[in-house]
Amino acid sequence: MKILFVASECAPFVKTGGLADVVGAVPKALEPLGAEVQTILPAYPALAPQVADGDVVHEFADLFGGPARLVAARAEGLNLLLLDAPHLYDRAGSIYLNDSDQDWEDNHLRFGALCVAATMVALDGVAGWKPQLVHAHDWQAGLVPLLIKMADRSDAPRTILTIHNIAFQGLFPWTTKNLFNIPDHLFTHEGAEYYGQLGFLKSGLAFADKITTVSPTYARELLTPSFGMGLDGLLQARQHDLSGILNGIDLDIWNPQTDPVLPANYSARNRVNKRKCRDAVASHFGLSVEPDTPLFCVISRLTEQKGLDLLLQVLPNLVERGGRLAVLGSGSPELEQGFQSAAETFAGKVGVVIGYDEALSHLMQGGSDAILVPSRFEPCGLTQLYGLRYGTLPVVAQTGGLADTVVDATKENLKAKTATGVQFSPIDAHHLGRAIERTCDLFAKPKVWKAMMGTAMRTPVGWADSAPKYLDLYREVAAV
Image (cartoon, rainbow, N blue to C red; front, side, top):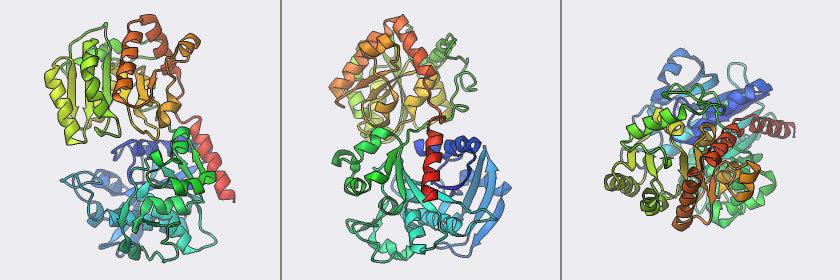
């Protein structure tokens, strides 16, 4: 089966979050099942080597202000179609934000161009290859189902849209619709219009044949006003077309037995070397070495969505219990400053690196005892899956994919040897503090903690279960 993925980022080439990891992993998981996936994404500067080594398969004389071309390349086990449009993508800094941390003013053109190019591939194919189905990811690809519908062709492939995070919707002035020749009868409350604006994500939700999101619990949450971010009404109307398929991770990249970043490798059966990784994390963050108390970590965007303001409130209690904390992330200036101040106040107990470092994130997963994910909402989350894989027990809010992937250390689950971490609810500072207390108490019981680590590391977190579910959905949709 031939499938076109449409996405704005893809690991390991360009990444700002979990979307890239999923887009980079799912095609490789589908390939052994008989699926042939091409992934179209913008040719950012980081992809220059792949553009140079690839083959031009289509040229656009003018694509929103300049010439462009599609370059086919094979890299890192992926079949790529790179939209090489320097006037749109050849710029330094974030792929979404300018130097002032504001959205690029032409993001509607940058990702609209991606949608236009993807639609051309979907309808006409390139280099003798034409997809049977198009899988669009998040708002940046949201116009594709609408543009395909507008073409009104009997040979058009059917479409699926995956919501990775509904908080990001791609909203632009209503006049933007004219750039894509969207007719008035489709620019309605039931269609592409969102309170007088053009909604890229809303367009996809309204016109895709099926909608998926990245965990079963998040799919249910999206039907409520608390989580639907203004789109819950549309999703309720389409709930029979909505399903949640749990994310997985790339087991080759995230493997404590072979991870080249770790100073010493280890496995579920032999975890002795995790101590050496722990010492390396402590050294990197300037933390004291205390084997009898847990080393917590945070690897995250520093935002209120991630609940990290709650963590700042309970940090004194964490330190008082003897715990230590290593933080890697960036985001809200207030939260960045808050954690930096905490590192000064609790020197040797709290260490902070502002920014993102992929290698350091691997080291932290390998060397920490527990990873804190106190998100107010979390579509799926990947860091807790990495934690399970590395025996770094997740302490998570009971929401979205966190609720689906972590088994709480209740008395019953501990007795049954199914516990893999700690969950808390309601999502507030008090209950986060209690979860940290519970974690410290569990860590103080070495036999219990070791049993939980073993269970966590044996938990299936790859794509073995979810990839076939995607393929079944593709076949169902394409056969209609």
